[in-house]
Amino acid sequence: MRSSQDGLRERLLAVWHDLVRQGPRMALQAAIPASAQVILSGAALCFLARALGVELTLLTSVWMSAAVYVVVLLPISVAGLGVRDLTLIRSLALLGVSAPVAVALSVLLLTDPLLNALIGGIWQMSATLGNSRKLRVTQPP
Image 1 (cartoon, one colour):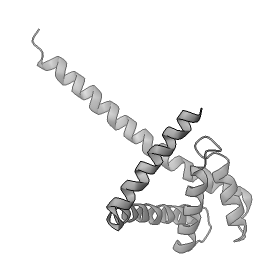
Image 2 (cartoon, rainbow, N blue to C red):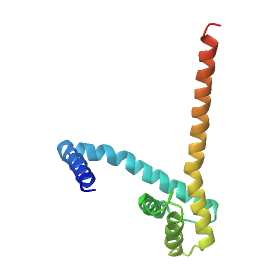
Image 3 (cartoon, helix red, strand yellow):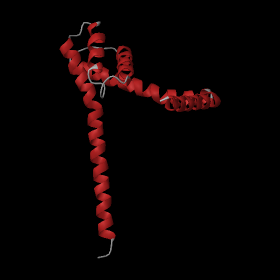
Image 4 (cartoon, rainbow, N blue to C red):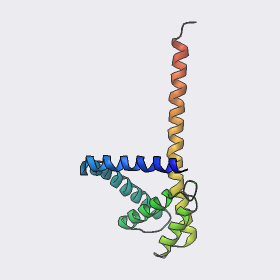
């Protein structure tokens, strides 16, 4: 058990040394796409909330989206189920939004990556099947 902890510690130190060696340039390269992702997630939350009749400002949506993202990353549930709901219920309750509406918003937020994964899976499968058909056609009988 001790050797695995030492190995993890060594890997974390190596990553830390790489970060320090590369300096602010690497942090900036990571911060720009991360910021864009947070803003787009906030915009999605804002639009989905409006579809349910809840008016949220973009700034409020961005902060809520960031809070949900942090909580979902905690290794306490599968795919953030439950913790996403609870985070939205509690944070939207501060704005006077009922729990059923908050849960509906949470389900909509969950369906977004699932729908994206489904589309990507179908696209990948069609590309794979298309390539296998081309291979069969081009092989001599």
